[in-house]
Amino acid sequence: MPRKPAANRFNTLIEIATRIFIQKGYRRTQMADVTNAMGLSSGAIYRYLESKEALFDLIVRAAVSPELLTKQIELPIPTPQPGSTLSYVRQVVLRKGRFPVLEGALGQKKVGDARVELESIVRELYRVMARDRQGIMLVERSALDWPELAFIWFGEMRARLIDQLASYLESRIVRRQLRPVPDAKAAARLIVETCAFFAIHRHEDPFPTPMDEVLAEETVVDALVNGYKRR
Image 1: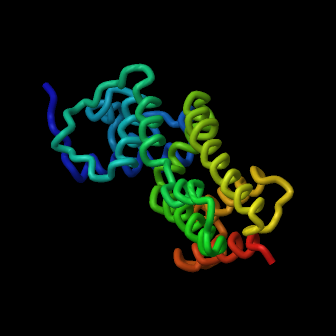
Image 2 (image 1 turned 90 degrees about the horizontal axis):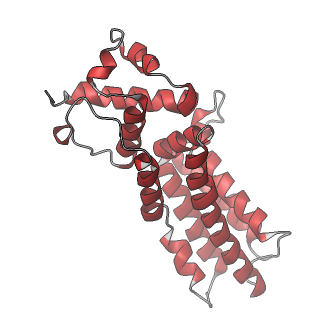
């Protein structure tokens, strides 16, 4: 008979499972890893979920919607239909993987101060990455051994973002508002990866350079905006 989960225990399950998937990736993570980390007896996790597929689907949805309510869930959570988790990720990418400031800039043919405009674009990108850090790490790590997920995340979402950034840079360079670069797509990729390291991956560094969130963001903005402004 279906039952409702206890909120504290269920949130602990989501937190621990998310951490393990980020550490080990999709393929290497086993249900036993989560069971052991939670201190449950062998097989006890199946009281919560039917399979690893159900667990991954759950933590992806929880990463997108932290307000996921336990009262809406009945246990054990069933294995999702084939392709439904990928479909959900694609929908989220289409909905949340957009950057209104960048898109607005692409529609502007004239701008008073390209440096201010570029700063707004970089800050938007950085803050989205910082806000969604946990979910991004989860999907990126799992995509390394899940080709279909990798295509959605890297082949569609990241490629679209780099194309948009490259188009923006090219338009401002042509108008002599930003300095010329060897290649616009390479420059766009540098912007993305710089934001990603400071907003996301520096938190996983075992020997980090000490800095708080404000300093990290300001360092990225200073380096990128001054690096591309016209002298």
